[in-house]
Amino acid sequence: MSALAVLALAIWAVLLFARGNFWRLAGDRLPAAGGGADSRAILAIVPARDEADTLPRTLPALLGQEPPGPFHVLLVDDHSGDGTADLARALAAECGRPERLTVVSAAPLPPSWTGKLWAMRCGLAHAEAAGETAPRILFTDADIHYGPGTLARLAAEADRRGAVLASLMVRLRADSAAERWLVPPFVYFFRMLYPFAFVADPTRRTAAAAGGSMLIERSALAAAGGLEAISRALIDDVAMGRMMKRAGPIWLGMSADVSSVRAYPAFADIAAMVVRSAYAELRYSPLRLAIAIAGLALVFLVPPLATLFGTGWVRLAGALAWAAMALSFAPIAAFYGVGAWRGALLPAIAVIYGAFTLQSALQHGRGRGGLWKGRLQAGAHKGETA
Image 1 (cartoon, rainbow, N blue to C red):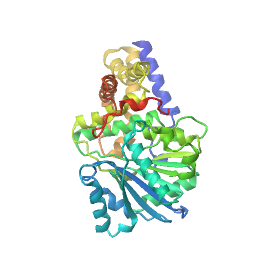
Image 2 (cartoon, helix red, strand yellow):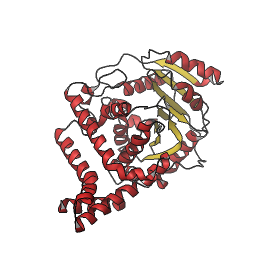
Image 3 (cartoon, rainbow, N blue to C red):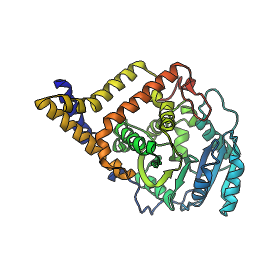
Image 4 (cartoon, helix red, strand yellow):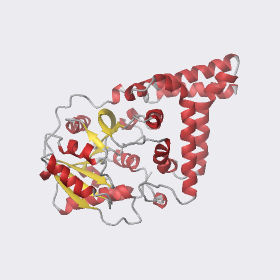
């Protein structure tokens, strides 16, 4: 235990001071004032599968965005059974923006594509066939609510950075008990894996994006190989980030003004969301799974165990590592309006996420990997872009 406690403390020192300040949010926020975006047209492509519950809270806000240049929204109805397409048209008419919305139906899903990426590709194909030449594409999910002026601010930030991809990790819902306990740590763990400062650093290989809101230079996307290059990716946003970083600078930020309205009322709902893709993040490798679980235990479990059961300097090393862990959670806790004291319970939450990851691997072994909205996409990983 003594060597493990010292190693855990050393790891936390590295995480705090040499991991791109992943735990600090200030430098990653979308600027509140975003003037200076150019006037090039933006086409928003919204893949939507059974989104009748979310669209009334999100589509009018998207249609009401006023970037400096022309703006159009293309909603791709992905074989919905709840009247998503008709509702979208009605909402556009109600908010006085019917001319700004086009609704198309996705073609049947080919076996070589995951569902969301295929819907996105169907949107691009329609735009190409219709002669839509907007040089910027906003890929955004149907559950994302844009506050006034946020698209213009995102475009301005992309211009300022010369980014071929500017993406926002939107504020996820944190209302239910399950969400308040598990959503802030989910974001915390993501930032630990993909420090946003490293994502934006062209000298580093770290690349990622957040699929809810991705503003992309259309020419750069085509030059990088298009959506076809990542058609099998289950974690499409990270794959997009990796692909686009090879084409030019990318940026990943956060904003409380762009949020998801999708609810996860029960712990089982969040489990399903994580289990869907956790094993894909490990590239379906049993070895990577074993390393990930061992690493999770070392980083998150050794500190409290050393503190509670160690003595002398072993206990001190464990306590310092545990304190570093807890304090590093405070900025995310503040962002989501939950108590910073929850950081002390990260070891227990890490165990929960470790269990989700093991369940994801088990589901994959049973041929039920990638289950989401009635689709099994376990086989889509073969040849997946890394």
